Length: 434
Image 1 (cartoon, rainbow, N blue to C red):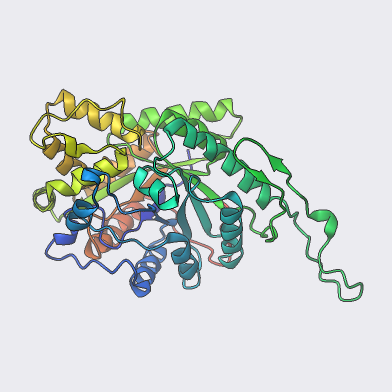
Image 2 (image 1 turned 90 degrees about the horizontal axis):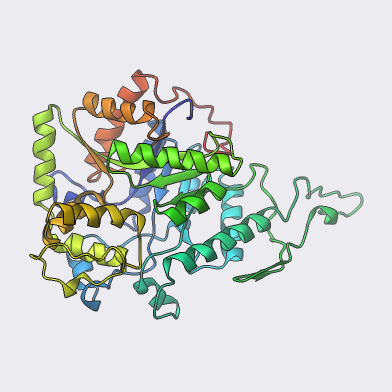
C-alpha cells in the first residue's frame, strides 16, 4: 500500500450524478469552455490533488431504440476530445498529472505513442494515458465497422497495442540528442532503433519520431473490473481506476490485483488502485441525506436506461421499463465487469428496469458517500486503512459547487489526518504517480 492516500479528480463539465445538472445551485460549465476547465484544474492543483482524469467515448449513445434521442434529451452528452484538452491544460498548470482516455480499438499505436510522447515533453512528465477498449456498436459505426469487437478479442488487441506503444516510446534511448555544432552531429544514430514489430494485429517498423523524454514514459492508467481487464492491467498499468460500490467488493478486488502482481513479479507498490467515489456533503447527516434524495428525484429514468444500453452494448428498449430487470448477464457485449454485479443485484431484489435505470444513473455503480466532511473522511480513511484502495478518483455530483465542497471541506480534513501529503516540490516533475 502506498504511504499516502492518492486523490484524483474525475472531471466532467456537469458533475457525475445524472440529476446534478438540474440541482438548483449547480452551475455546470460548457464542455468546450477552456476557461471553465482551467479554473477547476488549477483549484484541484492548489488543493493538492494528484491527478485530473478525463474519460471519453467515440460516439453519441444510440443503442437504446437505435436512436441517440434519449441519450441527448435526458443527460449531458457533449464532451471535449481529451488529448487536445489536456494539452491546453498542461500550459496553465505546474504539477498536477493530466490523464486522457484513448481507445485501443479505434486508434493505431503509432498515433497514440506519438501524441502522448509529445505531451510528456510539453508537460514535463505530467501526462497519463487511460487505456480503454471502447464499448459499443455506436463507436464501431463511426470507424467503418458495423459491430464492436467482442470482449475477448478487443482485449487481445489492446494487449498487443500497449506492447507496440511501449516499444515505440523506447525506440529512442536517453542521450540521443547531443547537437554537436563542431562535428555537425545532431542526434546519436546508435541510440535510435527500429522496433520491427510484426504480429497478429499490428505491423509497425518504427522508430518513433519523438525522442524519449527525460521524464521517462507517460503513466499508463487502465479502467475496469472484469477478469480479462485485471490480467492485462497487472502487466501494464501504473494506476487502476475501478468501479467498487462496497468496501467488501473493493477489498476483494484489491487483494486479487495484489496476488496477480506477485505472479507477474511486480512490486506491491507499483500499481495504485483508485476506485471512484461520489461525496454528497451536508453540514449534518440529515442535510446530506436529504440532498442525495433530492438529487435522485431529479433523474429522468431514461437517462439511466439509455446510458446503460450504450455501456452494455445491448438495446434495453426491447423490454418494458416497468418489468423486472431482464436476465441478460450472458448476452451483453459492452462493459462486463461493472454490469455483472448490477444485473445480479437487480434480479435478486426484483427491481424493475426503470428502478435500476435511475439508480445506475445516480452513480454508474461507483460508491456514493453521504454525510458531513468528517463522516465522509471517516469512510474514505476506513477504505484506505483496510486495504481496499490506494486512494480515490473523486466524482463531484454536480458542478461547480459540488467540486468546491469536496476540495474546501473534505480534502482539508484528510490533510489534517495526515492521510495525504502536505507539501509539494513544484519544481520536481512527476515521472511516476507518487
